[in-house]
Amino acid sequence: MLTLHDHPRSGNCYKVRLFLALIGMDYERRFMDVLARKNQTAEFERISAFQQIPALVDGDTALWDSHAILLHLAHHYAPAWLAPLPRIGAMHAWISVSANEIANSLQPLRLTHVVSKAEAAHHLGVDEALLDMPGMRRRTERVLRRMDQHLAAHDWLAGSDAPTVADIACYGYLALAEEAAIDLCAYPAIAA
Ligand SMILES: N[C@@H](CCC(=O)N[C@@H](CS)C(=O)NCC(=O)O)C(=O)O
Picture (cartoon, rainbow, N blue to C red):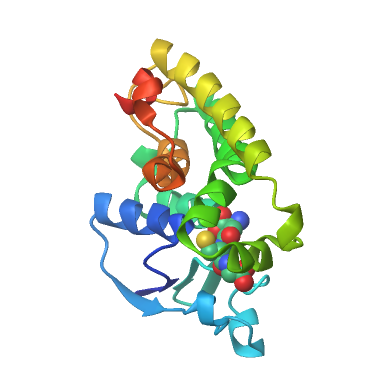
């Protein structure tokens, strides 16, 4: 049985829950109250090196990071969600977009909308006065524009015939864009 350390409001955890649902795998969901800092224990650090969720325990293997978990699940249980070899680099590039461009724009922007500014600043490791919401919005709009251009010409991000874990990785926070006051109607290929 798989065990997912999870929080219902976390977009990174949502990616993993969505993928587990799509591949039809049972798992036990363990609530980790990161907002109450319940993750900051040595015990949880043995599962998740940065004490972050999502973290997945699969038998003897403990994994952290939504992208590592998606790749682990696809390799072990759902290889159809990996791009064919000629597109494997493109799949990893879009996973990196999720882990970098989206994680540094839409993800923190949404956080500043769904928790208090003080809480958001704590989680982002910055002084509250230095929270740069216009900057986050600009970076979000830039990544969404590029992604929209790409999806206008491709059905799926890796350019393959079927979705891959890269689509799940990027979709996690796109699905929550409204909570960051971003209207995806402005990005028709993403919305489609
Ligand atoms: N690179 C990680 C980032 C995970 C992450 O940011 N987790 C947040 C919740 S969405 C968290 O655990 N925050 C609590 C903390 O850092 O103390 C991933 O993609 O899973």
